[in-house]
Length: 460
Image (cartoon, rainbow, N blue to C red; front, side):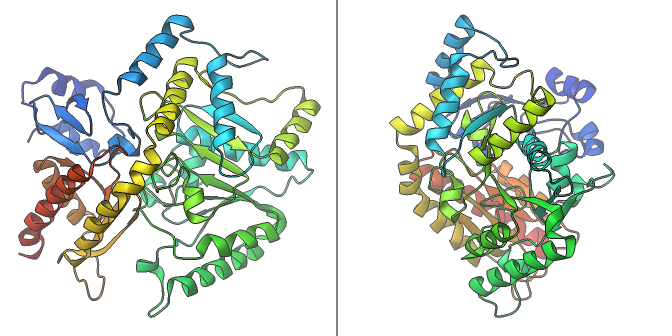
């Protein structure tokens, strides 16, 4: 079996199988099935090498906010390539695109921030945040305060350290992860983890109590920070229960534990506010962002830190003689220029306002799928959502084996011209922010057809 749009003799497909090691892919199946070759994109659609078009319901990987073919981003990259195609910011050197972007991000931050460190991906940004947290506590003379809290089903990256933070089993299995000093607390998923009859508010209270108990069991003097996505993305688009962050943040402050807001997916308008932190009421000490920072056109990420974190880093670098961390491509001038232009487009076109105007249609169509015979829960906010497939709606019993139903619906959606992402048996949607209301309806029409087609297969 070959991928859609490809033929057995397709040279790109055969060369892919011969030379490319694919992330998040069953490598054994890929040797037979081969790739789906995407040749171009336009607006919210991509086109395979057979000419078939697909609504990209995941904005590639949660990131192409402005859709494909945004000429202003192409021109921003071209201008910067001609002027200064590459340079670094090590050893007191700098350049205007990096400076301008840092200044802009500080101005846009959801809480007062002091400095910006640039990296190339969400994983690198979160890995940097871990190192900064350890550096910070060493600077404060607290060498034992190094444990970092994450949550089950969290997603914070795939480096050795950030994959350890990620709370998904397949990111740990046979990679010898997680590493030491990483602790996973409870997942705030009301549908799956609340007790019978427990309200969202009561569930949030219990989660805060369990978090405090976990901190006390570990020893508050050993716990340095907690990482949290405003909305948990790759873990299945888990929206926190009402009052959740309002209740856990006082616990963190009580024990002098830093809060890191992972805005890699939620930042730049996805949830209906510029930052997901604003949507759920987070007040982070460190904020990481990536993906929609450049609309996914070039790799770039950022770590924003408060002045307290920055001053501790200054003190420690004075003692050591340098701040011994950085990436060759930190604040790469071309990526920075594209990110700056992306932020300008967000403001000039009021992208957040557009998200707010079309999100009701998106959420209405999404929540309506809760009535589908295969759907146990439909959840989301802004322009992000997921449906969770279940074998029995009354008991919430999942399908067996896990993941089979999700893979089936994923494939059927693709057959119907829609690219979604199956995360186990949750089907995620995260379209480009520029999607129109008509395109939202087209998206959900395709997904509904896929769900309908899956019923006789799964229930037959």
